[in-house]
Image (cartoon, rainbow, N blue to C red):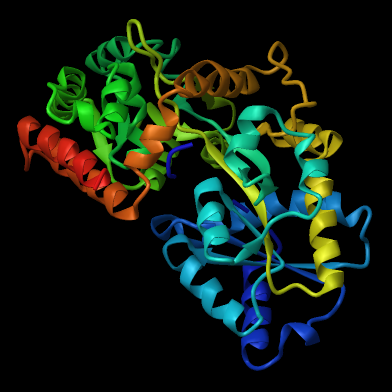
Length: 416
């Protein structure tokens, strides 16, 4: 997927152990039966509660591994997402890198390019459990560079006490706000791009990477940007720069409907309980929402001893096989499995049905455009620049014309 989440034991213990490692011991002196796992949390979401939630979820993954490796100690370390790459690179120079890295696919791809993770041995044996689409995320030169683990689909989260029927289209979302429901949207690129699908702008955005189209009119991009500006003028639609703000405001009953992903829904449900419902994002009249799935996987660290590498492979196997994935999915209803042998119980779970529809009917409807969208957003500079554009647009500091032209210019720069 275009550019573009978590999760294990206690962060205090993990940080202490990491400090001990960095104070002078080498990987050769690591306890043989200790497995070190690193994961990231967004800078704006790096709080005590977010780390506790991540550790709680990862502990469930640990349990499956420990059933067959009972004498192993699992130590996990949380990094801020914006500094994790640099810190692991520095640790790896000292042979102190983690044995496993849990993260989104775009991050693991970057780590592989920088030799911070290793391809899986006997890749063909691992890839048998994945369908073609999941394989495309994780295979380079016929090598499995990371093991896809779980999918966090993008959906809507809403208070079912104030909203009886979630909006099915972006036009219904406008009417919902006009009726008094409090709507929360994010200006983060990966959180707001769904509206580009609902306004039919995705084909034009992907075409920006084609030189033949650089001087053509882009009416759908303008329509998308105009919709965002208009939404910012509505009394009951509010924009937030941090996704965590949306979740907090919904849980505090200050919003009624927000965009979220399935992992965030887990956290919100702890506060809202049965008052929380999820549904797919609103489509357009003739087009699907561009729901942005977050695909997480396991990367093999490069500093493991042979024993630790075997433990790491055993951990991945315990959590990507069909039985383990089905148990985890049903236990939390927080994600979709990547193993193609796991069936989704759509009829018995409204939540899993929403996640399944988000992935299969919305996200996968844009397979043709994904490569160009990925190219358009492949640099962090572009991603940050678009975040800034959308924030300024919805704050009223730049015009629709300025926003459209800047988006087109970014596409032209990406082709250079």
